[in-house]
Image: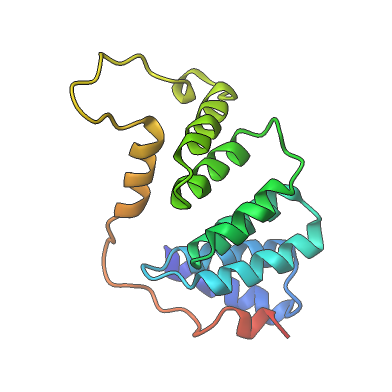
Amino acid sequence: MIADGRRVLDRALALRPDGGQYVLQAAIASLQADADIDWHEVELLYAMLEHRTGSPVVTLSRAVAIAESGAPGRALELVDSLDLGGYRYLHSTRAELLRRLGRTTEAREAYTRALALAATEPEAPVPRPPPVGPRLTRADIYLLAARTGVPQNGPPVPRPAKMCDHVCR
């Protein structure tokens, strides 16, 4: 299925080499389907998408790519410049960046704010029994899940060496 999507993406890039908004989104998704994600390339594609759309949510996604590239401080500066106070994902992203920077008190406050903004019951905090030892928060569990990744079904799907070779001209 990923191979099919990449063939469609190649065709879209051939038809529109300047990379329209949806082509850029597809290119980002294609990169993120790889086991070894090239976060610098993802960041570049998000920057192009941000330029096209002006969306602060795209900027938030670019900040994630910056953090994954190894620059959580730079990513936090970008996140803190956004005017998305009521957007829970801003606060959960900010919390993770603060945690990576060792600023745990601020991270806990940001996680708490993100949970307070949860719109549906499944996203709301779950009552738990009193902790016996070190307790994992919901955010810790999500982080663990993200770090373990999703098992691959079958061999890796080939993709162009650099997606930006097609889009970044």
